[in-house]
Length: 389
Ligand SMILES: *Cc1c(COP(=O)(O)O)cnc(C)c1O
Image (cartoon, rainbow, N blue to C red; front, side, top):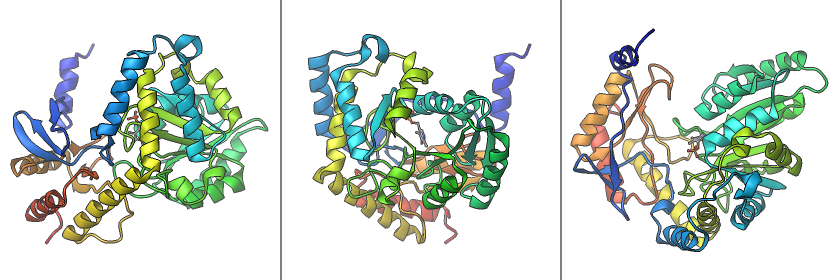
């Protein structure tokens, strides 16, 4: 039998060793304390700074006082509170969907929803750069899996032709993709995928983990910004990123949501999220739809534009994710270390989170970064020769 020590030694030898560090954000800023060193960090998904906001913290604290700490049971037992139902109603209204269901995390949303939607005899087709939870959900489902190169619609079209031959009259084909890719920050070709899935009679699930809160007039997401809301059957997202909390959701027709309530194992067999989280999420939803959300989005886009300009990068899809692809895992670690010496914290992202040979610094921006911080960070990146000038 191989020992865990042997396995760990192999992981180390490949430059893929991971360990947890204790990370202490400095409230009200993008600074942090890391092993006693004060650094500006560029790795959070709290794009609008809501996790840091007095409004959200206040709503959370007030709700804990009023509703208690934990939910005490799963949703179908005695775990569903008025707070969960109100959040789901408001999420559905926000996205212009018939219904919504919330989960403990985005990860759990995918691994619960995908196996409830497809199974043996069905086909699931994923973009190559889909997040781990989407891949895991597809594997867990037992459906036949096909993968197309990132945004390669011709390959998607040929997979769809193949899939049509595989399934019988009751069979389903599900396409799974993201609106904004988590490690590259580029957009999925939503219009192209919608056209193809309609032609093929397939279903489409779009994960808006990095889209919700940021795009569309009220932060609804990329799908709604493009006016495709009623043409994407399954709209998934998370409360853990721009909404500043924890949890996931799926918006769909009433029938799909009812199917998940009856067959989504990660939803059925897990304790309901604390009702205070649902109340705080309602507050976050109000914030992103109102003037505070608009103000924070404007600050975020200013920061993104400032970084792109300082680095001379043009033509990128507008997103807060601005990776610096380094290549080998060890090199990415060395760059991360060098930046740390200059006062900036950007963890190296390596295989299997990103493909081999594309290890990177996944730089992400927040509304809470100050322009001076963005400029000083860009200077350090340029000095490191990250952009060849
Ligand atoms: C982060 C992420 C998730 C998981 O969401 P959590 O709420 O953090 O579990 C799902 N999909 C994508 C694309 C993500 O980036």
